[in-house]
Image 1 (cartoon, rainbow, N blue to C red):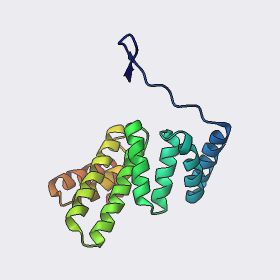
Image 2 (cartoon, one colour):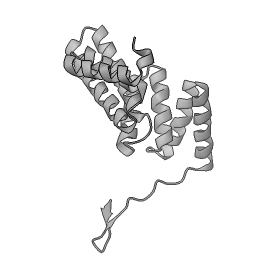
Image 3 (cartoon, rainbow, N blue to C red):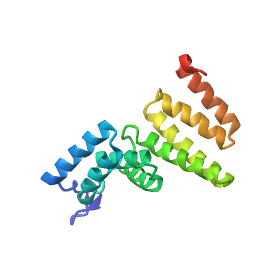
Image 4 (cartoon, rainbow, N blue to C red):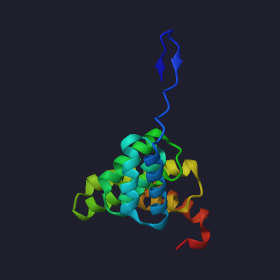
Length: 173
């Protein structure tokens, strides 16, 4: 928001409309994403993001595709931009949590225990935010419980495991 010449607050200007090429690139990104063609989806989403850096669908597709391809820093950047632009975008916090969890796993495997614990806590926070949007999202329930456990947060982890079991009793293994 900004102030108008008369001192009133005005809404931000909408993003510029996508060009014909941008619309086509977004459709290619969506189609590739649905097929699991992660590199193709990422490339097409990048075209959209050149003209609309905060295009929500392109950010989600880019970030998720990058996660699938192990490009975790890029995925984290796109997904953080997405959750800042639209905190309620479906599964955005889950995807960001997943990226942070994978980064924590890498830190843990390389012996960087304390930084790993911090990343696990960040991941758990993202899963918690996703659960506020969708309280029965099983993947967020399970991932949150595991992230808290690996972060050494025993009591919160037990509560999270209990919530996971209660929500999905048929898979309480």
